[in-house]
Image (cartoon, rainbow, N blue to C red; front, top):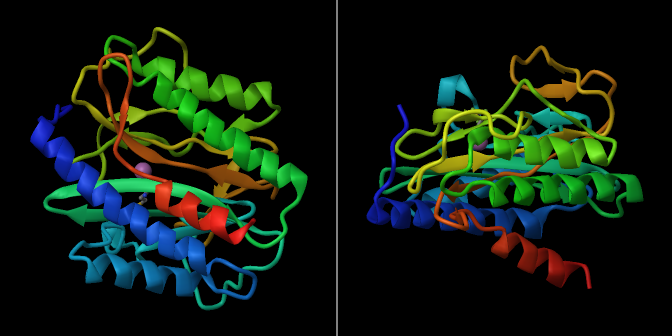
Length: 261
Ligand code: MF3
Ligand code: CO
């Protein structure tokens, strides 16, 4: 069942996404060699709670933290820990959700830690491009497969592969709603997109082969070949002509700009 959102509901979702974006701004300030992913989780948790939201990954199907922090070959659902110390040259995907006024926000961003290799920077850039190319397809009258095709095409054109075990999703009063938003697919396939559909689009792109395994913690997904992965996610609303992006990287990118000039 796909729930189309009213304009009023869309504004609530924009608010919850703004809070998540602001929390990521704080995470962006903190990320540096020597910092633990457990510290990032604590900081995001406290920021979200202090602003009246709930970090809705916490407790979701038993998940123990507020963020997922996936380092290098970890693709998604890495569990923050005081024992995971970020080091120079790492990349870390930070993924989390916020529940505010009855609506969930969901977005993710992969950050460089210190000085990162050209090849990892390129993986991050192309993965973010995949996300925006997918979002360009999230318009009324297009089909779900158009999103997946755009993402897969750009990833593979650049010599990367797409993780198929995890997918984007509808979002709203529930963190995961219909439909599933695959990061691969065929143009013209799948349901027709309608104005008011809200989708979390989240390409997980791998530098090497597309095979992944789940670690013994039952959550952490990593590449089998241990080559790095990147992951970006934005929640959007399907509209005529142009999707309305509800999440924001604005706070993150402001901080990164100030820190790296
Ligand atoms: N933010 C994740 C998503 O994109 C949520 C994963 S569920 C968790 O769907 F429990 F691992 F947090
Ligand atoms: Co998601």
